[in-house]
Image (cartoon, rainbow, N blue to C red; front, side, top):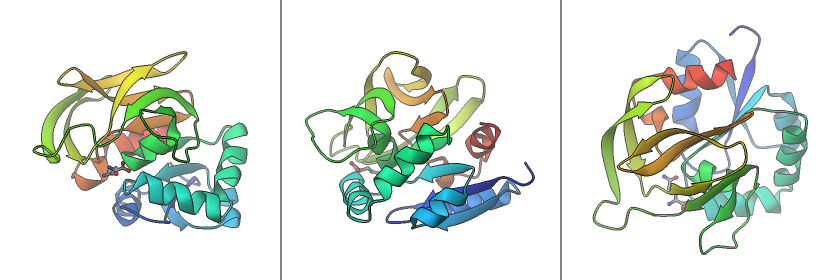
Length: 187
Ligand code: GLN
């Protein structure tokens, strides 16, 4: 996808792995930490990490409003894990900061302690099989309006698309597959 520039929000979390995955796809990908950088990109990834920390930094540096401004212009945004939480309108039992762009309700740390982190075989609508790496992952409890379920795992919703927004509860950037990065590039 020549000419398109992806930004990975690099305030906290697993941003380097996303950058490397996009570069392996042949796309230009920069780390973004400022309004100027957010203004430059054609797509934005909000990585996994700690959603309360990323949210606090978005608010403190006034970057949340910048992201929302770009979203209003149609900027495609993909959130993985903590990033998915930040995209949600509704976060179960939490009033933490969020961008609130997707019509989904998420539950944080939803898989409990014993299975804190695990891997599973996924089957994604339109993409087929994928390896899912879940790390203190959320899942989606409910979707409404135009939010479309792309993948469930053990009866729980783990991937959703809504217009220019994509959310994954798992971490494709920690696998060898570039399928979902390619998918986002097409968005
Ligand atoms: N548990 C984290 C949160 O609630 C998300 C974990 C992750 O991004 N790997 O923010």
